[in-house]
Image (cartoon, rainbow, N blue to C red; front, side):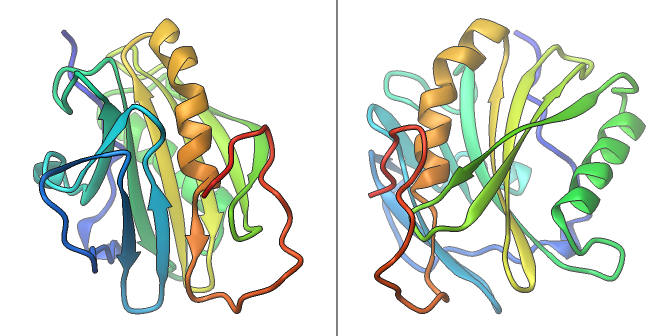
Length: 200
């Protein structure tokens, strides 16, 4: 089975920690992700496991995979990361360009990214979805980017083949729409999530 590709970035640009401590694997669990200037809640989709241990060696504090599988062998996984803004990376488009540069310089010269749609999250944030294809291992990926005040939050679905990718897309949408920025003031007029995947 080919290796799983995890987007590569400069480690010092990440500020990522969990404020709520869970056991290693939680079925359909949720977590609060908090850093110096951000805090958000995110929830596992139905029949998926939230795991805050399995991805640590790859710099991932929070990963998801279907029940009955694990991080190393599942044909489709989801992970969450945060990148703090820097002068050269201040918006989602900068982040996408930087991801492509990193993937191409690390052995995937033919990788491409395509914007496909925008989802509305639990807190009415807008998540821009890009599809990535053409990496050296043949993975299929979708990443949802959410622009926060001082950072970019993103959720990535990584699948080993196109069939697994398509099958996992509803779970990916569920994770994305569950996103709730806890630093935002509460409002009563938040928009409902799109595509019928409630974030609660």
